[in-house]
Amino acid sequence: MVQKKDFDKMMSTLSDEELYDVLAHENNYIPEAIESAKSEMQSRNVSPEEKSEFETITGEIKKEENESSQQMVIATTGQRIGNMFLDSIFSSVFAFVLGIILDIIGLAGASTEMNSYLLGIIIILIYYILQEAISGRTLGKLITGTKAVNEDGSDLTFGNAVGRTLCRLIPFEAFSFIGGQGRPEGWHDRIPKTKVISM
Image (cartoon, rainbow, N blue to C red):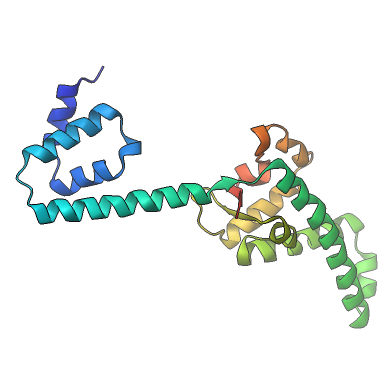
């Protein structure tokens, strides 16, 4: 087991900047390590200006981390069910409008000759990929106040949007939402390493 003297020795080898970084990210370290880092900082001849600058920087880092953690609230079961219900309606409307457009431009015959299952997959791909790649939000997500993001909270890439949509086509994917203690994540969240958050 690591003892305090081991942490003291380790912290003494770090530069001032590295110690600042340890203290700025206290949540990433055990209390003994933080205590050793603070002791090491006090033993060094750090000027008041440097100390003030350090406190300002660490305060800003902690504020950003708190804001980031507050923004990453996983969507509730109710929101996810709402998304599924609303997007089913909107994708059906989208399919209907697309059918009218194809009829107007004279391509209705092509869509009627196509396998209905394949046509349904194409409609789902277009509906979800376009919206999630652009904003991370489908029409359903806009209404429920949710957004699809990467695990780190960054915006989805086009590849993430494609991955999420392809995973929706996995048989019985809807059952992957069972559980989650009120904040479920399905295969189309977990496999492409994304999540749906409340805005």
